[in-house]
Image 1 (cartoon, rainbow, N blue to C red):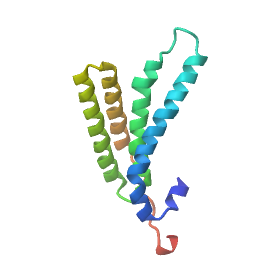
Image 2 (image 1 turned 45 degrees about the vertical axis):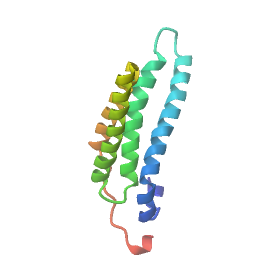
Image 3 (image 1 turned 180 degrees about the horizontal axis):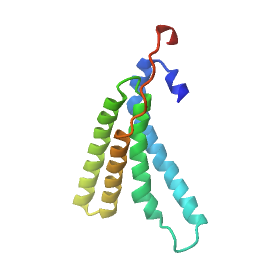
Image 4 (image 1 turned 90 degrees about the vertical axis):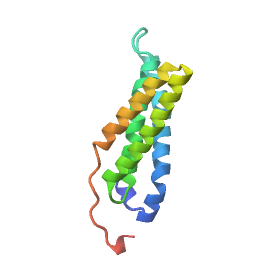
Length: 137
C-alpha cells in the first residue's frame, strides 16, 4: 500500500472508480481461474464449480471493490466506503432483481453474496493516512 500513498492526492481521487471496477473484474477473473484449477486438482464428487462462481467469487469481488476504493481514498475512507458500498449494493440489487424477473435464480445468489461482501468491507475500513506536507507531492 505504500506505493499507493506516493500518488498525488488529486490523481487518487480520479482513479477511485476505475480501481474499484478493475479490482472487481480482476477478482472475478482470477477467482474463476482458481476455481477451475481447484476443481481439476480435487477428487471427483467433491467441490462444484458453481460454489465458486455463485458464492465465493461474488462475495470476495464485492469486498475487494469497496475495500480497494477505501484504500485509494486520500481521506474520509469511511465515507468513501459507504458511497462505493452503496453503489455496488445498488448494482448487485438491480442485477439480482433482473435475474429474478428473467428466472435465472443462481445469479440471484451471486448478487446476495456481492451485497454481503460489500457490507463486510464497509464495516472494515482501513486506517486513515497520516498527514502529508506539500513537499510530499
